[in-house]
Image (cartoon, rainbow, N blue to C red; front, side, top):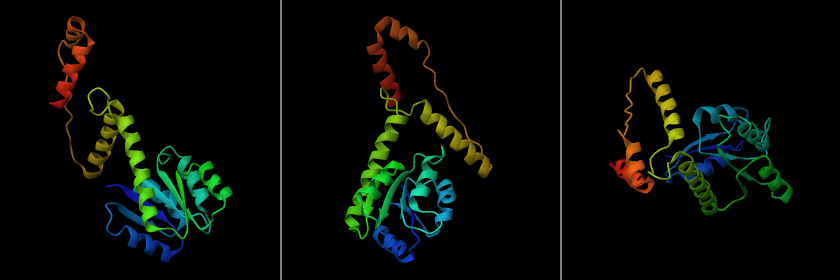
Length: 193
């Protein structure tokens, strides 16, 4: 389930977001304290961070800079939603690496469409990064990330887990004798099984 963290100092606005997203398939966390936004982003690990710009203490631009400058949170997508509607405001949002911008008051359908577009783009990118193009299976990066997460989970819950590694005996001989095209067919067939 995709996770969305919404940060807006206006409690009524947060209630409106909850109403709009009530029947959606997203997991939602709302936060009115801009100072806690970075810590919550680290803990909650949202797919999208929806940020108001005009907030006390830390504004949305400052929060976005913090998120994008930290290796643990730099891949979080940021959607700015603000009453600020000048071209300069929008350009600065993109300069601090925001992914999209919506002006208040907004149409709930447009808001939902933007979330869907951002998440669709994020999922396509992740698929390219984590998937082997030949077999469709997870690649080395995918398994390294999954292994790290499993280790943390096992440690947290004091559980054990197993990993099976499969080797194809004498596969080099298949490539050498039949060629790489046949070798690719064999790899795809094994991957499907």
